[in-house]
Amino acid sequence: MIPIAITGTGSFIPQRVITNDDLSKIVDTSDEWISTRTGIKERHIVAGETTSDMATAAAAQALATAGIKPEEVDLVVVATVTPDRFTPTVSCLVQKKLGLVKATCLDLWAGCSGFIFSLMTAHRLLASGSYQKALVIGAESLTKLTNWADRNTCVLFGDGAGAVAIESGDTNGILNHITGSDGSRGDVLVIEGVAINNPAFQSTEPAHHIIMDGGEVFKFAVNAMNESIRQVLNGTGFGLEEIDYFIPHQANDRIIELVAHKMKLPREKFYTNLHKYGNTSAASIPIALDEMNNKGMLKKGMKLITVGFGGGLTWGANLLQWVV
Image (tube, one colour):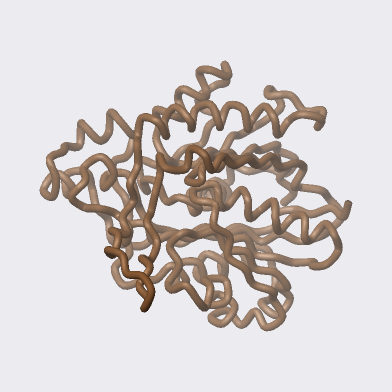
C-alpha cells in the first residue's frame, strides 16, 4: 500500500466558556458533583459560530502546518452529527470557504467515533492511489442538541473542531485501524430525527435532544476501548509497552482511568483535556492531537493509538506513527 501519514494538525475552540458553577445556576448541580463524576471543569460553547465555521478554521490550521495549498486538497471527510443543515454538507461548506476547488467532499456520521472512522476512510482512499492529499475533520456543535434542563447530560457536552491533514509520501504514519458497530444497543444513546409530516401521515415532532443511559454507556465504553486498543495492535508486531501515548475520546475521566487500570497501563500515557472542553464528540480526538502537537509532545517516530466509542453504538481505534 502507498505510505500515508498525518502531516498537519489544527483546531478551533469557541471563546464562550461555561463553567460548572455557571451550570449550577441552571440545574441542580455543583462543581463538586460534576468534577468527581466526570472530570469536567468547564466547556466552550458556540455563540454564533456554526459547525462549518469551526471546521473551516481547524482545517485552515491543519493545511498551514502541513504546508499544503488549498488547491492541492483532493479529499475532505468531516465527522459530525451536528451539521449546519442537511445539505449542503459541512464538508462542502468547508470546501467553499477554503477554496478547495478540486476536493471530493463527504460527511460521515458515527457519533463520537466519527474521527476514527473518518481517518480510516480517508486513509484507505489515499492508499488506493485515488487521492493524494486529504483533510479529516471532526467538528461538533453539541450544545445545540443539549437539554439544558437535564443535569445528567447538560454538564457533559461542549463545542469545537479539530482537523488533520494527511498525504501520501515516503513514510507510513497510519499503521492500522479497527472499527465496530452494534445497532442492537443503539437506544442507550439517541438523538431523534425529523418527524414524518406528509399528506399520508403526521406524527408528533420529537425533541431533538441528546438522550443517554449514562450507566449503560459507561460499561460499554470501558469494554469497547479496552478491546479496541488490543485489537488494533493485532498482527502489527507492536506491543502495548511500545505505545508512547493513547489519545482517547474525551468523554469521562473515570472511563479513561478504568481503561488504564484494567490494561495495567500508566495513566500518564493517556492524554486528556476534557477538564477544559468537556465531551466534544467527533472533535475530541483531533483537538487533543493538535494540542499535543502544539505543546511539542509528539516526536518523530512515536507510536500513538487514538481510541473511542460513540452512538450507534460504534467504537474503534487507529494505530499511528508520528512522522513530522
